[in-house]
Length: 430
Image 1 (cartoon, rainbow, N blue to C red):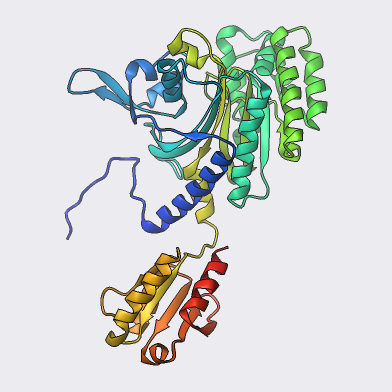
Image 2 (image 1 turned 90 degrees about the vertical axis):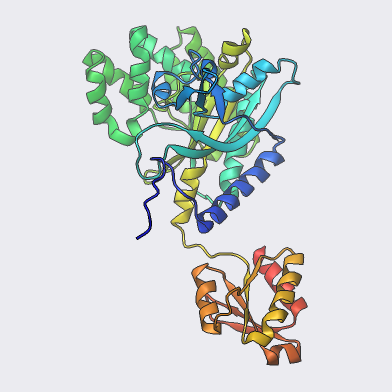
């Protein structure tokens, strides 16, 4: 009986099959990020508590979930809970960096929250941000880049929901919600997709008078083309300056997204509130389906960097949840990659090594038997790893210079020389 070696709760090992999928997802996302001119950077996994706990950065709910402790020097530090606050700290420490600064970062973050399916305490995010531009073109760039990342991963049907914290704040003022209650109301509204109208009403009944709840929900459930929704809400908040600003900003944002050819994926959704307190303008979320939910979200945060720098620097960004992508894509029927070079007998083993080397030199993933197993056992092993092709090498194949290559999925078997096999496998990878 092996000795029990427990892991920290909320963490898990990632096995080769999942790592292969994870690396595939990250690789495709990185290609899109770089195509848009975002530059990769990294920040430490640990930050000073002073940075993580800055008022207006993560907010009280996130701080409750933040891992923090004293180091051996008695300094209070914590694990980063997102990739945005460390970026704000970095900009404050490097105030002369050329702006706008377009960066991407892909890495682990930690939150001591409830553990559920698809939710661990250690997870990966992929962020892009534009720092130093107050133009809606920066927000459009971030949204378009995220949209292309979804397309690169094979998602055909998804919706980019857009709203504005300025509009939401104006709505709260229009129905005379007290300042100290606004964040409570916004958090309740943000749950509309999960708990439905009745669930939101139940939560709001405890916070504000009933007649105001109905008016709020009537507005946030507005449906139609982006311009129609903006026209309707614009009339209601026309006397509130920040609301007018929010409507005009979204109109400009939509016009840029139209030029970027992704307008058909856009929906103005006034129920979208986003949980974090630091958003100041447009907010957005990439929604796949009711079963899957949102896989990415972000928005404009023009005041966060000012918490550390002493002056505000405009910024906007979006975060893609790598764990959620892995969870969704793992459910699809997937086939592994590469080829397994199987030997018929011991005499053919050396030949298999040489063939594998040639394939690897051509950029093809190749494996061979390391345990002296029978041909049947080699097939079983390759099949367990979901390797789609196996090359069969025996005395006959070596003599004739023709190798058998079998497709595990179809059972089809072809006879080709090594050059033809290389071309065949390269074409299959396209």
